[in-house]
Length: 85
Image 1: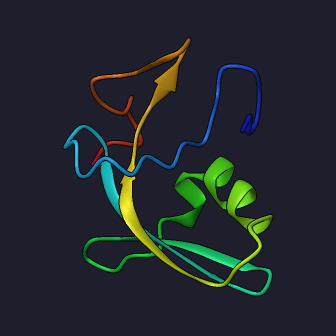
Image 2: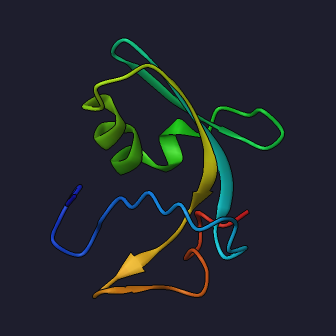
């Protein structure tokens, strides 16, 4: 689903950990969406496209996974700075 422009996309990939992104947990309850790092820091402001896309999901809950960079039909080897930690 496009989020924030033609080159940006939010992907949910169920293929296990790929190790090329940033490990995060997405928590959604009602209209509130937050992203948390593995050490439980709120990093929602670093990924506004993901937060905006998750706001439209039809469920409440928690997703655990990785944020990956995606451009022109391919997953990039790593997130560009300043997203990568």
